[in-house]
Image (cartoon, rainbow, N blue to C red; front, side, top):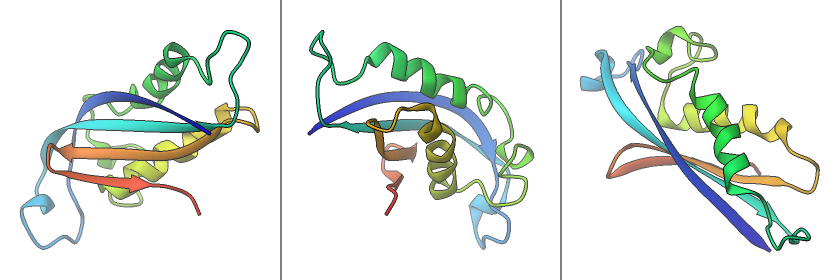
Length: 122
């Protein structure tokens, strides 16, 4: 089994509706996103998955979040843009891009150097 990981980041603002604390106010983060793919075999070149291709796919999703207020972008106009919900949303957008033998193992979203949420299906 192979795990292929890439890391990308984006800058965005958000606020947490109904939260009792500072995060209820509009504020920003440099969100770091780590995506892990799980594959069982290598291709003819000896790669489980091309890092360059995965970075493009993840970047295409993150591009719509970068330098925006996440609360104004679907699905976060209806649910809080917590790190947990951001990770699940990225997973939901990324998973359909792959063939059946490529599994998105997990998506991590770091909102600070000390705090992250991981979405892993199942």
